Image (cartoon, rainbow, N blue to C red; front, side, top):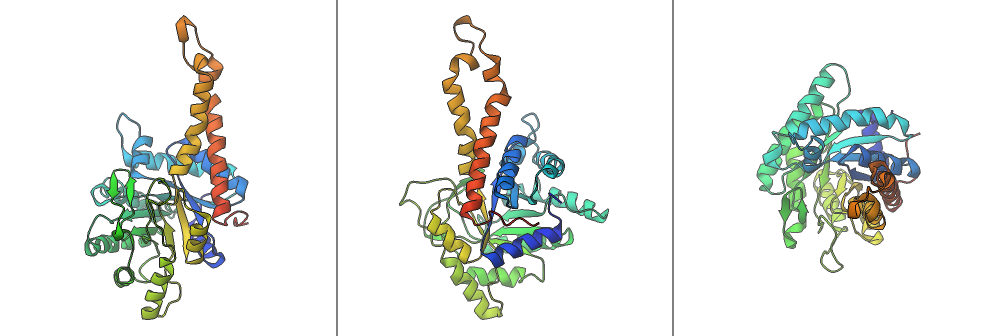
Length: 340
């Protein structure tokens, strides 16, 4: 069962929360980066989450048509086949989707899974993200209610981002300022709209100073202890201990201490993209510089096919990215926790 069923995905999240570890959620943009993520999880003996952003899906759809749904569906179908060769379980997820892209991405993908479930099959993706952080909280939660109802019917978990994450992700950007911290009132309003599981399970991307990308020390002030305040504030009103399944966005470059605090306070999923992008590209750059006269036909020469063959430098890229995924599993305490 390499691709998690809805029941197994719920079990994965429950195990992470109870064990105070989190799954690395690795963004992929190709079959090769997919294999790198799967390889890293397998080497760590960790289950994990594979995710595709709107930009990643557009890239996967091909530059001729740039169709996001085609790209996402194609890679998900590919993952269902190749993941069988890896002795771990992964969930498929779609990353940040703002309001202007819902009709071209998440809603059509929900329809694909609705059709599959109606036929007695499992959904194609196990979770989808709605990023309403650029909207007012009222509008954000109104749309989340609609999406959560459809997601529950299709046996899918919804991820919601209720307040901004700084930096830029696929064209959606927010300044780095004091608005990057979710309040207890924000969390209570979220529960009022989405419930505590009875309306469908959701993951909560709360903001505690998170910023996409990697910044020099001092530019980002993370407060992962804020997650405890959100949990306790909601628990005090509704009587449910540790009510949220939190997602850590903007995780690349975070310190071990910040990650550990986040795990202790309910984070079950941490997005990793910037660091794995660099890990994938770095050995390719080294190969090109070291073999410039082989990958290029310099001064009338014919070059060296063995050096410009994409398989040569592609294997280096895959191995490097897989190693970064392995490292992420260690940081998030998921190493060795795979479902047997």
